[in-house]
Image (cartoon, rainbow, N blue to C red; front, top):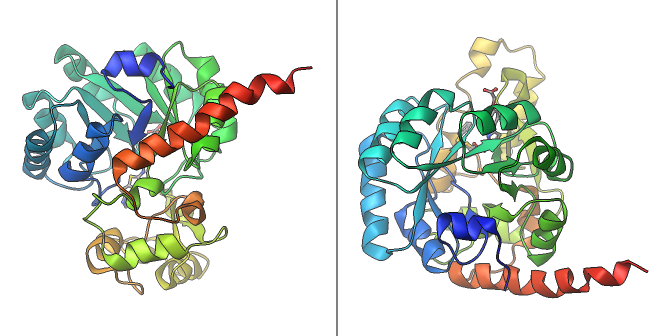
Length: 315
Ligand code: TUI
């Protein structure tokens, strides 16, 4: 059994979060993860407040365990969603792709445990000062919107910069990743890509899942750096073409908008030409579809002997 302070803080059995994957992580997936003893997280993505409220209600019909909501701060609906989580008394909020400072006081007043994703030491210090309950240190191995640093480099530096519990994310898909994260000073992990292949992840088109299951080690790439929004996704026709446009003489104004709606096209249509199939670098390590609860049990069961055996390195 692997327990840490994050389990007590949130009332969960295992220190495993499911990433708040935009367009993908709905109430059904979040409930399955929470029922499996982890923390299930509903992704607000670019959705409206009412859509998020609906998903919270769906999750609540499926579980009485704690669930979280991830607020994507670049969304035009972020203000609205920030209010909905208060009204719905959501116990945990995670944030991504920006600085949640302006919401922190309101969420704290509503007794919400706020766990921002941070991709730098400066942001970790700011969030600690503003009263976050824990931090997610997400390295650039992850899928979707990525920061500059890798998990290996980011996690220990974030741990040094805060007294809060730190959850490691990016590049973690099995028990070895869980054990390594704990060795770096984290007290839990967040996985996104692995949960794309959870049985209860029914929002994604079969093409998306098939691409993940068939992926190899070099299957992802980062696009979007030129406009300041780097995104890691599968190396599809869309990603290759977008990368070509970034290096062409195209103006910023023309480039902007070339990726809009591409994640939705991947998730709902499985469109291999126009879709952006966001994925972490560990896609190659995801080889089977299984229930969310089994994923959680499996990574914890794999991590236990590794952690117990670690003392053998010290002579
Ligand atoms: O947010 C994510 N990953 C995401 S969001 C997303 S939706 C999207 N769709 C289309 C285009 C772009 C995004 C898909 N994947 N991960 C959490 C994360 N947050 N990673 C890095 C950061 C981050 C970066 C900068 C957090 C804070 C930050 O602060 C910058 C500042 O404002 O100083």
